[in-house]
Amino acid sequence: MSTRPFPKLRPTVGDVLVGGAVLLLAVLCGLWLRGGGEDGRTLSAVVSIDGAEADRFLLVKEEERIYKSRGYTLHIRVEKSGTGFSVAVTDSDCPGKDCVHTGAISRVGQSVVCLPARLSIQLTGTQDGSVDAVIG
Image (cartoon, rainbow, N blue to C red; front, side, top):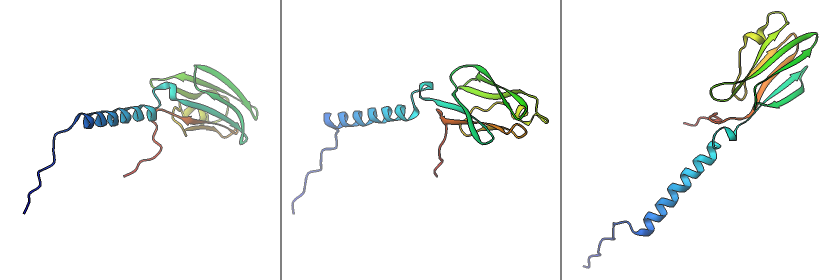
């Protein structure tokens, strides 16, 4: 009956190098997936009138835009908020002013709708920190 010697359990220089390379790749992949900050953001607003796209613009600066539809005038304001930009209808001469009371939108998928003017504003694109799916 022969006994085999136990394998060496101490890490070698090669083991340390491989472990460091894996750790470095994990950090780089995490930064790449995160988008690297606000430079990775591509948030835009799509304005539709009567279901057809009337305007599309990137949310990169503070500005005010005016749209007229079906006899109504809507004032839309793009403002810099804490984490990025937001869009809000600041004034409208439509009855009820539901579009004004909706408030500011700042995340992908959110929208503001003015039914009397048949105008909608929807945010599209990608955004840092946005969640596409939750698993588990």
